[in-house]
Image (cartoon, rainbow, N blue to C red; front, side):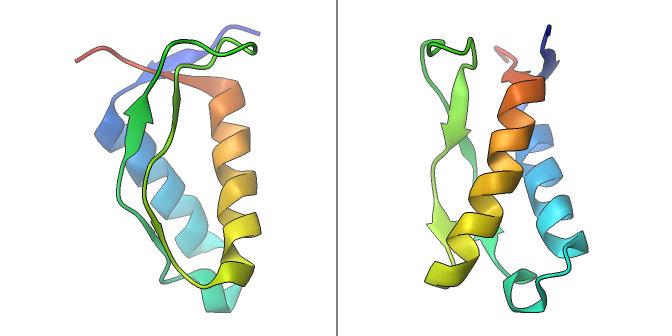
Length: 78
């Protein structure tokens, strides 16, 4: 599957929107500050999240959101 391109701000906003819309009420205030570029990995994705500030139980929630978005988007070179 071909990935769409998105900016750092767009990816960060998508992550935050999905966290905020989630059913995990204790996780709604978790913030992911930004994403960071890296050379494409074995899946072809060229980014990952860089800052997580939330309770440990929410890490899995945010990780699942990021994994889904990593399958669908690459970071645009702005």
